[in-house]
Length: 83
Image 1 (cartoon, one colour):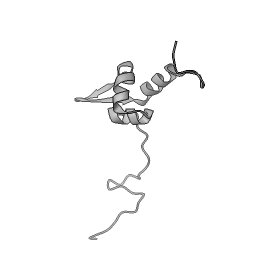
Image 2: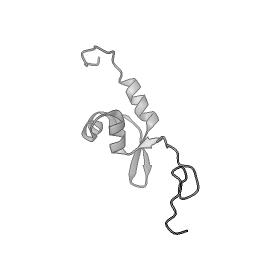
Image 3: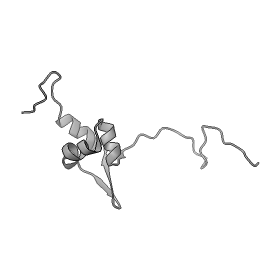
Image 4: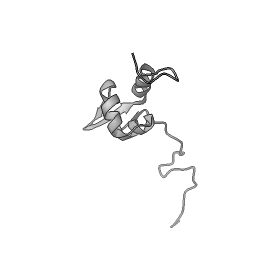
């Protein structure tokens, strides 16, 4: 049937569409997930987390981003200076 539109819950390959939670992000996605710019990510985060190479692409596992966050927590109200 020409012009047939699949229902919104069915993808072209026949599988139901569902939200996909990423296991890893590209550099810009990793920065965005932390709420910082790519420059800030490069300067303060990137060298402290492991990455996975997919060809020439680097992806940063969510688990590494969470580990970095946990290791860099400070108490609310702190002056922002880590000891």
